[in-house]
Image (cartoon, rainbow, N blue to C red; front, top):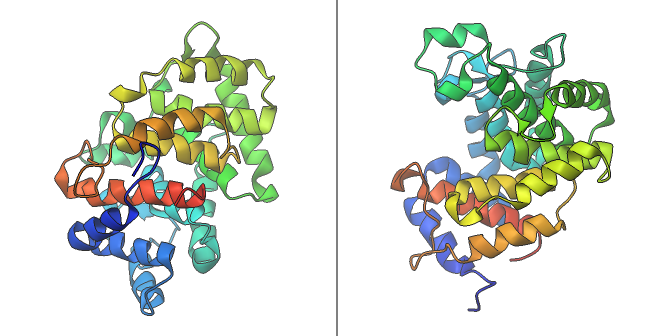
Length: 275
């Protein structure tokens, strides 16, 4: 095995051995090998709330929130399997759209403050509004549906108003790697934010980012229809070196999430026809 390849068999074996039921289900979807997959998928989708959102911390019946809703459905975009969940996905998108504010941004509902929320989920702050808007924007682009063009335009306008050429966004790095491929896709590579933002991404010391973040960067470019971008090649070069002897990629959240991280690596490499 050379430095620009992975041991797919070992990765699959690790997921089947250590993965949660949902990891194994999604792996079966990618491999198209499990005859009971659709029944399992139907059970998985019952987590969705009646308003279309996915509950906070994935706890059944909980408050519908934006981050979990995107996380729940994003793999179907990368797998190009949206057709099998289209009814549920449409409800999820409607939930997202209903939460766009007049100024164009997205943020988690104010009632999230009644729970044990994370700093980046806090509503009412500029960094979090930029971050949340960026992930929604990129997710909507991945749907490849012109019905959402006006929503996308409002997102990019809001983000443009909160951009500084000398410092970028006043937000987390995640906002940059979700927003910039989206700007390249919608505004063109010659757009000033597209150009300056890509310059900033190119300065990232990729070896300092966990594998889950590297995969997320690749997903963001894929959603923006930029799967052949040079930046992805740089990220992939780092990912290739990360596979451990038992086939996994380690998660920064602990061993419990190694199978999920490994699965997302397979997803993007499969989408890019690298495995």
